[in-house]
Amino acid sequence: METLFTISQTDGRPMYLQIMEQIKQRVAVGDWKSGEKIPSIRDLAVALKVSVITIKRAYLELEREGVIITRHGIGSAVADDADTGLRLYREQLEKHLDEAARLAALIGLSAEELQQRISSAGEKLRKEQS
Amino acid sequence: METLFTISQTDGRPMYLQIMEQIKQRVAVGDWKSGEKIPSIRDLAVALKVSVITIKRAYLELEREGVIITRHGIGSAVADDADTGLRLYREQLEKHLDEAARLAALIGLSAEELQQRISSAGEKLRKEQS
DNA sequence: CATACTGTTTATATCGACATACACAGTATA
DNA sequence: TATACTGTGTATGTCGATATAAACAGTATG
Image 1 (cartoon, rainbow over the protein chains, first blue to last red):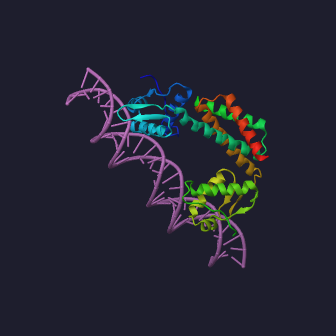
Image 2 (cartoon, each protein chain N blue to C red):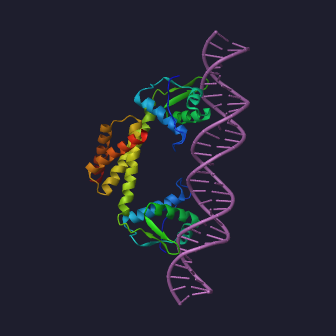
């Protein structure tokens, strides 16, 4: 099996969430397409040196969000309408931006300053990830 | 003592957080001004039918955030920093932008698209307000 | 200094999130 | 049907967040 994700066990964020996000990312980026099988929970557990149950937890949540489907004895695959599940992210994104805009207006922040800040936020993120 | 807050003990959000938010709001709105004393932890505990320690917890966090100052034997008051209210909003704004940036990165949204979206959010708001 | 206010400290209890092991169960195929 | 894959269920353990009571300590003022 090829190289997969890396997870940090001491990074605040729960492991199962890190796994979920990296899988969503693969799907969002088009790396994994609808119908394609994804690693078995056991393979992934071994690869990440994590319990099977933790992977199971991640897959279960992903299924609830409509990103993957799982069948007993078969395995898991990217859902046919995986985009639907990912639309959830876009909605969240929209909500945060709306709220940000509201607050910005409240304290009289100009559009330029706001643009400036969103850039900073992106930069900060990029630093953290490296 | 006048009417204060209402907190829901079954509303998911921890009580001490609900208390913090309502106090911040009072300050931000200008209802409580710099230097003004705020209720003693005991008074508030009685009023909200909550333990003294829970109020203490809320006040402690508010102090760490620089919203209030507390002195043993005296009580608590809104911090001198007149800018407090605005700073609170700025922090919230920052949080929303950080989260937005994180989500954007997660779904592979380009910086340009993100800029586009924050503009849209601003436009939407302007329409709603007119 | 007694009293009646303030906040603080310590020790404890409860609860849910996170992670786990191991036994159980479905599927495919040689 | 034996084997080697898949996922599932149960029972357990750890840890941190939340909330508490009761005793302790500072401050002001008659």
